Image (cartoon, rainbow over the protein chains, first blue to last red):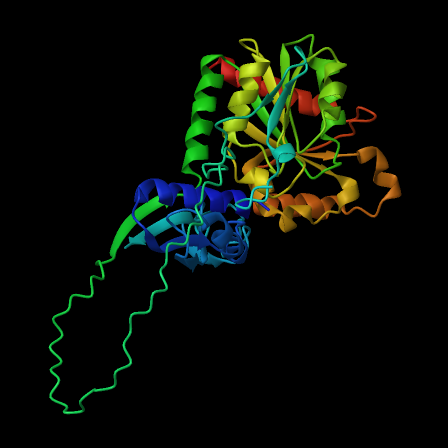
Length: 109
Length: 297
């Protein structure tokens, strides 16, 4: 369960940025193809936030849909898996959205 | 046990240097607990219960009370601060430092990943025996616990350092940096990093290696590449191991290759048996090619 370590990272990055300001809300962007489970992050967040400036903060997670672009013909398509086949027949597709793991913003009091 | 992350002392990452027999606890790794363990929270409840309220009910109901709300509620304005911060940025930065160090020392670093029991250590033992006369090899072993694998590697005569990740399910770039300090690999050598057996997390944590090599044993089923696409996508090579068992299994080899290529059209697939040695020459050729391309850089 790498979400625990990742949540610790989130808390440590936000704490560092916040200094001693109290955090009211944190917003993350997690891609649906990122191999990170938002629910597991939510599960870990309160425990990791305890005793930090993030204690009691609201966690918002925007989930980003997967999108691919064909390396051969350049067409774009939605991706629900990290694999796909382009209309032109190739599977040489790069993922252009859906692998995000980003701390978007924080709201300080 | 630490309430913040559930770790206990025995779950702290540590490094065992098989050459010196020294054991070190990792400090400054990602898991180095920025939260304090000093539990210095004070529970001195200074609230006073002296209720000075008077119950003399001479309240007047002449409603000429004025609602002049000029009380300042002192709600400090909350501010939204844009961060746009990559959660794994710290690891990626350390990984790039490792990568630079490898390049500076002309070392080829390969990150071997698989599920537990796919045969990483057996493959490595065999590879070391067959190639150690061609170039110097060093090994970083990653496991949650025990130095069993490092002991197996040490018996080949190769330099090896064991990293026990404790609660961690993968190696991270800082752990590798600390392991390298102990291993002290020679210039122009090859470093094999045997990651923790896990097909999910190691894909997310760049260590600074040149390439990832996934080992999939054919006893695991042909659909692993689509079940765990991140790992196969991140790898340059797929070694299909335990091919000696092929006659005894219902393993659909062509489907497996098709699945692997569907998540990574550039992955190089090599069928091997670390037990019998079949196919290993193709794997060795790939390693030699990497060394050559490194030297021509």
